[in-house]
Amino acid sequence: MVVQPFEKCGLQVDLFLASYIPTSGTERNIAFDLVKWYGGKGRVKKYKFFGEDFKGQFQQVGLFKKALGLVAEYAEQQALTYQALLVVRPDMIFKTHLPSVISNATWGSVLFGFRLHERFAGSPDEESEGSRRRLDYVADQIEWCPWEYTNCLVACGPKYRCLMKKTGGHVSVMLDERHDSDTQADRNPLYRLVRQESRLEVHGGVAALLLFGESATMPPMLQQLQAVRAAVFRQGEPPTKWVDVYAHAGNISRESCRELRDALVEPSLFYGLSPHLVCGRLDGSRDRSYQDVSPVCDCALRAWAEAVRTLSELLMDRETSVDFEYDGVVIVGFDGRFQGNYQVGDYDTKDRVHVEFGPLQVPHVLIASSRGLAQLVGALLDGFSNGTAMCEKAREHPVAAFERLVRGVGLSVELVQNPRALSL
Image (cartoon, rainbow, N blue to C red):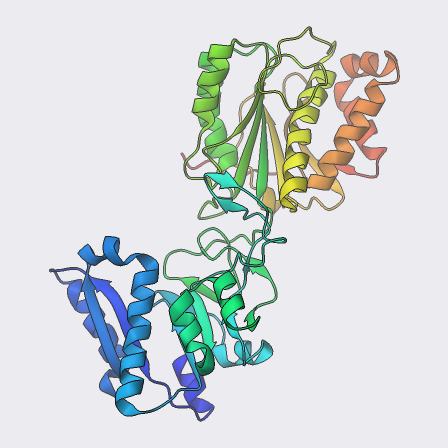
């Protein structure tokens, strides 16, 4: 997909390899087998393998520059210039002929694979502006560099902003679409890494809204949370890291709120160290980590709607500040048993919501789009704002009342069908 297609275009391709290898054992030979596999000295002009103890010293940029150094050394020895450099990781498997991809981009510019998807907004420790506003958020596993900009690549490494400045703006991407560079978290049409590839195509990821109820107590909540991790947190196969957690717990103590917040931490998720948790009864106020006020909900469906409204406001604030939209939303209540693993990507949420009702006849599981969630919350709260009639209907026939309100804003209601079997 890379070397031979370029050669078929009449171009000579010289290879340079730099990598880490174990200091002993059979795996040490794999790197040297790679040299033979690429065609030996006929193609591989220079290679350098470093012991694993150099990883801490070099880091990613250090090894990158070591590889470029091999090219510079050989070019000087042979008194030649290349048309371009292509820098790739050896564990990448390309899905398409690279020459055709590059020809559709700008041959004369430094090219990265693609921009990072819309949900990415900085490091796991600090969320800032999203990738729609930060053009420097690019996948740096692959770079195409015209020879005239080689010194810029040496000076900058795979750093978009630096290269933009050094090259006078001659930096672009091969694909005009956004993805996670980690193919375990998001698939893309350009390449996959040797490990298992995700079945999902992620842009905004999934928002998981957890409703622990107004009178929940700690031991049952923590026990139910383990079921939720299996039923909701594991989206995609292998599970993607792009699931954000929002939770509401009822009238619990501040100490219990802190304990629950710690229990909600999920290191496998990109922003899993900072879940959004609201504790206390709700009075319609916004964005409080603890609310200890008098109850205003006099029926189960209205209590459900108030909790969802509070969490959806946090969700929409996050979408607005980062400038993205979730691919889907799943809401789970803790009033029943989970029947399986709820994969948001399995459901068409364009103009419908998918619901599984619990023992209290309010949604135990609900799957919708981000926009559908906003419409749903608006419809429910508008209905309850028109006096006591709606609440009386909701107490007597909550399922029918819920469906009537949702259909009133142009969304259809479908029952959740065949959730996948839990893999515990």
